[in-house]
Length: 102
Image (tube, rainbow, N blue to C red; front, side, top):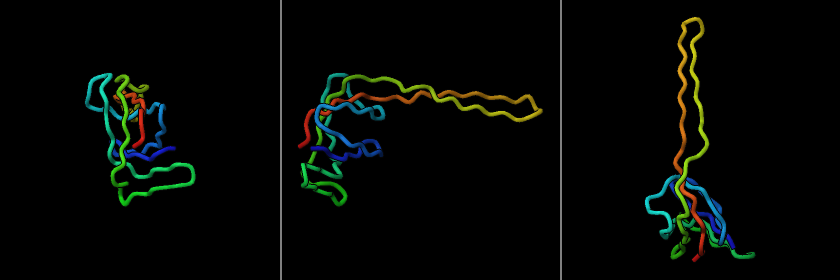
């Protein structure tokens, strides 16, 4: 059984007892979260497709930790002018354990 859930503007395929990394969520480590925007529920050969979401469906999870992603570096340069600029960025993420698909 799996579900397609929209979290923070992105869609994730989730299954019970699997981990997902999403953009940082509000909440302390160890707290429970519920995602109500379920776009699809699949169980063996039975599919429930929402328009836009499946009524009454939700996905529950537990926040395990808050962390940062790998650094992405942007570099700008203009030839013959001596202009160089380097900018780095690390996205804040949350690791979530999926506990149940309702």
